[in-house]
Image 1 (cartoon, rainbow, N blue to C red):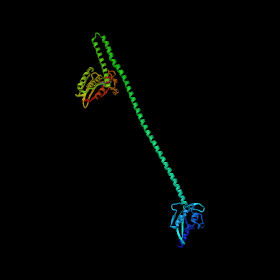
Image 2: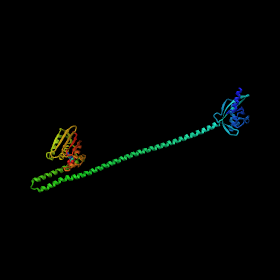
Image 3: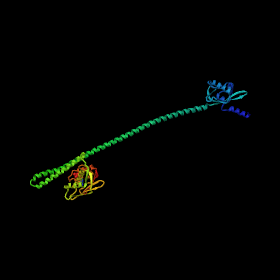
Image 4: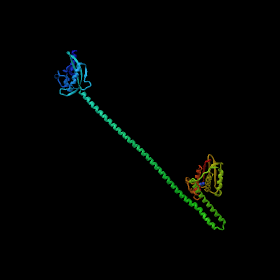
Length: 421
Ligand code: ADP
């Protein structure tokens, strides 16, 4: 080696940041560099000739001797205590962590072992700090995870609670809706009952006023005529007039009572319907004949229409037509014409038209109600039962009835019936 090389090696030995130590095969220290002196707190002189084990904590010395002897038998460069923590023992008794690389050299026929020693106190401290931080971090992470779990389960709990609350709310809403609906139904029922009761009340009072009028008039007539007959013993013509009045009043009473009977039959369901084939024009002719007696001065009935054999209940249909035609006669003036028309289409349509007093608009809605009489009919005899019965009869024959009317102009009633019932 050149002088320069030797000089550099020398400098390296003295200024090295690592401790360098030479010892012989028996472990006796030959020389140490200043860094090694500084690490262990001994001077080179104090160490020279002493066994390296003096720099090793007591419990480890026996093992060290064995491994040193093993190395001497088979010397090769290696890291000492690989995988284990090594400690150095200072002169003052304190220890410090270190790392050692071993090598050997031949010098003057002797094998010298070289140990390169690194004080790893700072690295170990850093490692310890790092480990501590790692442990703290792990603990912190675990704590966080625990918290997240807790919070999640709390949230799940909360969510469950919320959902069950929502469910309860929904159920409550449904129950509320049902109660409201029940209440509404109950209210409707009560209203219906009240309306029925009111209608019944109104009907009763209408019946009482009708009955008191309609019964009293003929009865009074009968009574006074009977009295007069007794008085007019010798006046046969006057007696006959009064007998006539009596029989007409009785006829009126019979008509009223027949009306009640028809209504009773209809409402109890006792009214029988017997369908058979019959000729409509013949039936109309019969009606015309039967109402002759009611006609006023110069009144006439004109009947027009298609010939038709229909299947229905002729008895009921005759009653319908008798009612409508007698109304047309009753509510139209002397000299008036009642038109009775039939048309034979898909269905059978019968119209009864008059040019009488007509029906005030405000009465039209309730015309088919029992005992309802229009305002302008007050002075004309009637019970308000006829149209109600007619409507029921028409329904029995699966038909419909409508009307158009204008006050003081006249009325037209339309009955539409199936041709083959
Ligand atoms: P009534 O003739 O015995 O009073 P109805 O039930 O037959 O009873 O008729 C009900 C009411 O309808 C009558 O009181 C009358 O006011 C009105 N009405 C019926 N037919 C006619 C008509 N052809 N012209 C005018 N008003 C009528």
